[in-house]
Amino acid sequence: MTPANRKVQYNARNFAALYWLRKNYAPRPLLLHRRVPVLRHCDAFVTNFTAAEFPVFIVGAKRTPFGRYGGALKELQPADMFAAVATDVLKAANVAPEIVDTVNVGIVNAVVCGLCLSLLLGHISRWSRREIARSALSLARSAQAERDNESCYFMSGASDGALAPRHGALKAGVPRERPALGVNRLCGSGFQAVINGAQDIISGAANISLTGGTENMSAVPYLVRNVRFGTALGSSIEFEDALTKGSLDTYCNFTMPQTAENLAEKYKLTREEVDTFAYESQQKWKAAHDSGHFEAELTPLTVRVRKQEVTVQRDEHPRPDTTREALAQLPVLFRKGGVVTAGNSSGVNDGAGAVIVASEEAVKQHGLKPLARLLGWSYVGVDPSIMGIGPVPAIQGLLSATGTKLQDVDLIELFERPRAVPIEPYNPALSQKSVNQWHGLDNFLSVGYFPDFVHQHYKILWQHCRRYIINEAFAAQTLACVKELGLDPSKLNVNGGAVAIGHPLAASGARITAHLVHELRRRGLKKAIGSACIGGGQGIALLVETV
Image 1 (cartoon, rainbow, N blue to C red):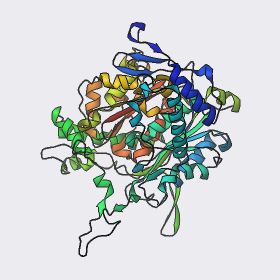
Image 2 (cartoon, rainbow, N blue to C red; image 1 turned 120 degrees about the vertical axis):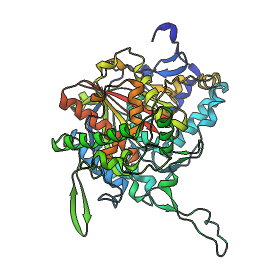
Image 3 (tube, rainbow, N blue to C red; image 1 turned 90 degrees about the vertical axis):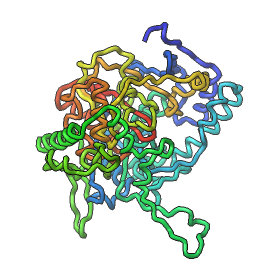
């Protein structure tokens, strides 16, 4: 990025609002010397932090085995799964729960009630300093309530599912004075929780943040609508399958698998190549499992089966005995002549993951051993009807600033979800209206209080990455991203992806992050990227480096 393409912009008005907010409500004093420049780069607003100035280290990363739908983990509460893996990762990282400053946990199947921040975007640039400070105060109160899970309501397998992030932290021994935030960026929630933890550190709100994701999809209930205030005699009451209905994006009127079919059709992906990719995902998982490659990242869970305690030590979803012939016989489910089947899509699963991020100060003060450094991240919006395209602009945004070469990348994890995504070049150009909405918010947003509004965060580069993972929502979707980005298949999802392992929504980003951290170290490699598409038309990616 050249000086001609960017403009370092400080906004005293918004910085005053930030000072007001941090002075009165931040858990730590405002660090004025941490004022961060925001770069205005051609068609998008970008907030850059260099690793030298704001190092964020991953000091622990674990996940549970992923249970199959209706499997051994179906009775476990999301809070209990996260508590188990959080307890294990704290012990493995030699981090006492008492020194954790913040908790950020992804959990999906959620409806959050709270202040609608988007209403502010069109007006804040015209507000006075006093108006901004007053609104910052209101937002802080609302955000603090959400951090304490007092104004969030989740549709979950538990009656108190809204409290899963908070309860999971408390059960893991985190002091009750520490705030917990429930994060929902759908399939990217696990990644987003890690990013939120890093933003807590960069903003000075924390030195150590416990992050991750948890999901029990087996326990998501059926719903009955329009009966709260009574119903007529003889009315037929429909029981709605929340998992099935939740797959429909009513904005574009496509289900998630149909968006994959849209891309498969557009880019002429064949059923044979999609099934072959799914088969290879299963075989990669088997080879890695048999070789013990997952042992460093797994936290066994104890469950009761027929009144006996059973320890779950391996993923339940993989089907390593499947064959190409068996996959070819499965029916297509979403479009005549299509390619998406149950065999080449990710699963509906249960599980949790936890990642501890820490500042350089905390690493030195507590003698922690970093596993990796979080170098950057990016999240973007795309056309909802081809939402599986999300990883492409997210990865491009993450890498475009450094100018490194693709052949220098070691590993990529690309989410294999049932969203076929052959991808065309994407240019996330912002409209002038969007630019006007962003004007004046730069520094106010960059410090970590409202991270969801940052268009791309930490734009780092293609060239220095050596491994990558793109979550396999759908085999077709992953293949499309591979073709568009020109990825080396030998570096992609080297131990299998979500087609084999499964996809418990909010836990997947934490799983991928944990796996990349351990796999880079096991192979003696340097850099890796994890990425996922997101329902509704988004993409997310992050970059890690071994230390």
